[in-house]
Length: 393
Image (cartoon, rainbow, N blue to C red; front, side, top):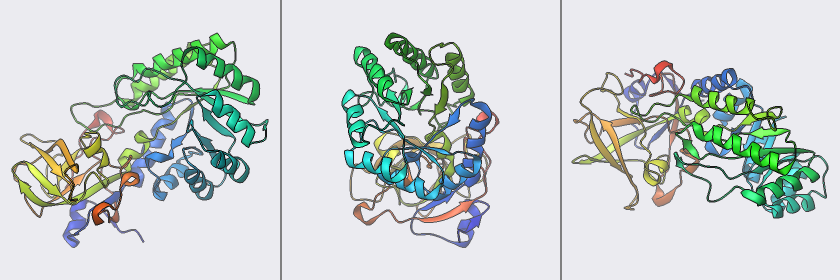
């Protein structure tokens, strides 16, 4: 049975773990989903790749999420068996024939994404010209302002997009349009631009789309200096949709992955050594902190047991080294912590729920985690008034 504690302090009063500890907060998943349900007029599709932990899927299902964005046959199988009756959206624009066949015939998947005519013909051949397909055309869009742009890999453009829309309209039971403004999109205007661009392409193609999916990119708030008001994003989307006659009657979807799962987990790590303002900790870029090492992510962090607010005056900037014997295992931060942090101290790194556990590997013999559940608040929650840093300890 999962052990539950009020805070990381309570846990450490009983245990001094050698390995890093993943801390679950199911209430944070429920709160995030409820926020979207209350603010967004469309339907949620959870992007499973962000966090596949059963407790996250269970919490989302309990909140009423019944649609899931799956990008592989493994994710198809996972959701099919864990959420009976779920609607699966296979939104990876490029899929193998074997995986399309199994998804359609074995798991009842009827919704796929495409961004090239070859993928349309592949799906039709494999499904034996099925007449019950919902096909989303993935369009290229401006992803400027996102921390992780995705436009170089996927998305139909210009005349090719128009012809693809026309082809899909002629063979699919339902035509959808979708795009992705980039992961951790920090400029809400990109959503409005992408919707207008999609509507223009639909108009040029002379077709009607029954489905509109504004994709993912909804950001989590990681830094106190850069708070994110998700309400602005929803307002931009709703305004743009209402002004688009070619798509405003379409069924509307969004695919939050990061925004729904970021607050689901935090990570307790131990400081194994300090050299100046460099801390050697027992997890890193080959573990839950992959984004901190490879994408320069700055997670909110605190010294456990130090007391006071998470973001207080007089904190100092630190960088982290992970436990592997690899020089790439570095997280440059800066991570703001009290200047007296020392070997043997424990840190809690918050908002690691998105793309943390799914990226962790066993490289160099590291990657073992204990798991517990915590009841206290999340640092810099997107879903608390004014994004206040919770007082912990």
